[in-house]
Image 1 (cartoon, protein in one colour):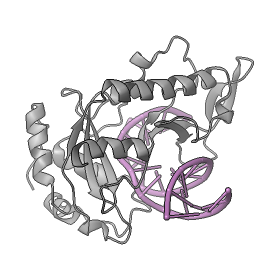
Image 2 (cartoon, chains in turn blue, green, brown):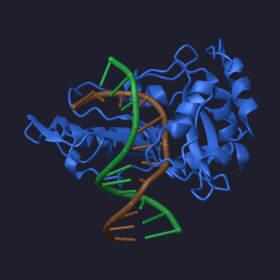
Image 3 (cartoon, rainbow, N blue to C red):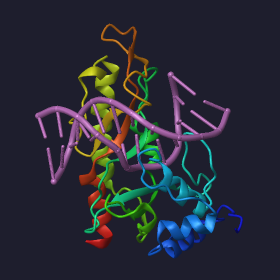
Length: 223
DNA sequence: GGGTGATCATAC
DNA sequence: GTATGATCACCC
């Protein structure tokens, strides 16, 4: 198999991504010498990691963009046969402590979403994983309106967290950005702010983009 | 049937 | 536990 070198510039990344359009996951996996799982129950991040590898993203667990030198975050997104997202999109872990002075502009959500390369992949469960095809990639930068929606949701959520009301937040808060559990299981705990300002224990949370929002992004191109 | 809350694998 | 990659699956 060929070694994958990180793309040197944005056009090189886009060129590689465009070449994957129409290809099945099995073809990519074979090319990489990887076995295709029968389902994603125990391999939930498999598609994302496969695409990352093929595009030459630097493997790592750093809270940064996948292509830091290009300022690009890579997201695979499962779609139905109409091109509509089947799942919400995870963005990053939500900070629950030490958030005094944190603003939208210097938040991790804002930073990660400045520029995203969306790679749609057929995601309907009746399609065998290996037979699922990759779609046309979309390079997206939030326009002022999208930016404003994200910022508004982020600020509302973070204010409640700062007030010690994280337990009152559900996935129903937010128009485009929502807060949901993000952990190995519901027993996982982390520190958060209590209503009296002290620390308490809570389930870790993450920020997710709602499917109605990502559908709009995809529709701007395919609509 | 869709969305919310829960969960899976893995590296460190 | 926290971070990466997300999808599962139950309840409404």
